[in-house]
Amino acid sequence: MTILDGKKVSNDIKEEIAVEVSNMVANGEKVPHLAAILVGTDGASMTYVNAKVKACEKIGFHSTLIDLPEETTEDVLLQKINELNTNDDIDGFIVQLPLPKHIDEQKVLMAIDPNKDVDGFHPTNVGKMALDLPTFLPATPFGIMELLERYNVETSGKNVVVMGRSHIVGRPMSILMSQKRKAGDATVTVVHSRTKNLAEITRGADIIVAAIGISEYLTGDMVKDGVVVIDVGITRVPDDTKKAGYRLAGDVDFASVSPKASFITPVPGGVGPMTIAMLLKNTLLARERHG
Image 1: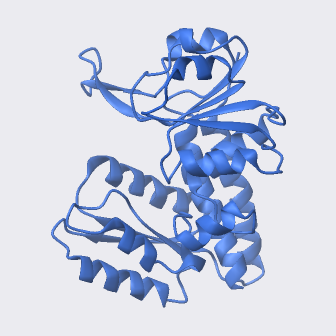
Image 2 (image 1 turned 135 degrees about the vertical axis):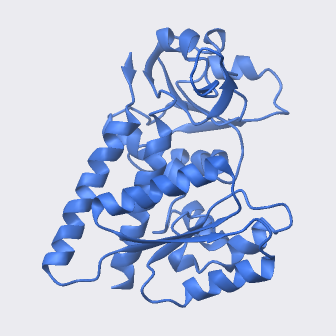
């Protein structure tokens, strides 16, 4: 059983990007600039955005954090987005999700300039992805594809089961893995909360991408020997033995699934670090496109 070490691979990618950035500096070129908008004080979102800012510093990117209070109106947020859309110094930006309940998430995502949408959530970029045209891929699926490629996991002709149909992970994963690409050419089945005989389907899978949002849902009796398992989930599970009072768990019951797996991602340290690395890669791509 091989651990798909997202932490190590993400560090490798950051080092590769840092070399490109230092070459830009040496040639007197503009350094990539990533901005993030954070609305409110959601703990997980704050941690994630801070990690992005630190990653930018580490590889030599410029970064800007726009921190807005919880009560910020939709109009004010849309105004900030428009400012970033028209600011030539900003190559790419993200609006951290989830947003407060009074703000229409879809309206906000639609307002982002597709050429600066380094999260890859704008319908224009999603459409290009579906048509296999050059675009910004959503960071988490992009990171999973990169992990599979760098560990030379065979995907061609394999049966892949994607658990979950979200616009951020499940749906794009199903599209990418069915396309003609290195970590692709697979036969893909999407399962979700209404799927009948779900365990029967997962037992036939060569590769499982678990993004269903239920902690430790996928258990050892639901997989076959030699399966490749990508765990996208991350949930805080109460645990009195931990100093923080909780432990981080994925959508996969690692203890029962890992003995049967040929490759598996850990939680934490698997998919999570890859998401940030690919956001940086998208920002570098945006900078190169803007010239």
